Length: 252
Image 1 (cartoon, rainbow, N blue to C red):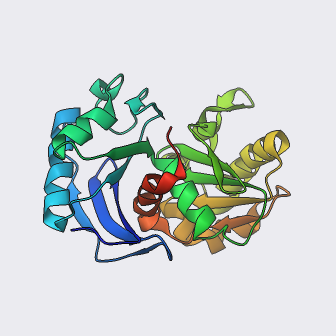
Image 2 (spheres, rainbow, N blue to C red):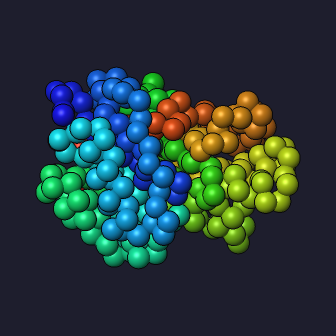
């Protein structure tokens, strides 16, 4: 069922498909999030079936917003990260709508969804101006918002810094792979952040991803000039942002 002021968001990741109804007045989940393991291989049809199962479990009958780890333009996936390469060129909006009985759906990039949520309800809610969210994980996801308006599909993790893509220098996976200390890794992150702030001049940079839980161990070591703050919503940000997109947030 659906309720006034609530919207349903689903965050599709490499390990789990997670969803919940969201109170759009507060950004809080209305109930415990529901999680289904991401099918392997994570083909479009298999993921669509998982989404249908999740929505049925929630007994939700309204529109649904969904994230994908992909560039999404006009509802069509143009890239595929941590999901099957057969997603490239798939009309995800049409696919999910059909799997959910023809109801309206909105599909957007997962980092964009997280950025929207952190900008409205989370770490950046008290900042006015240009907000940059970066998620540090296997790669680096990005979201850029100006006074709450999203510039979709920025993919700043692929910006070259010193001859290497940013995410090849400073993703959390690089720290683990190379056995870097927080000091060593923060130095690489600082180089990337300095490049990005010189391009965009954000008022704040929000750091997301699992490593943001250890923010006190590395954010104080950064040497770039823009304030960097840890994400607030973390595991719920994608769900909340997906729900926001239904409410007129974006149509990427």
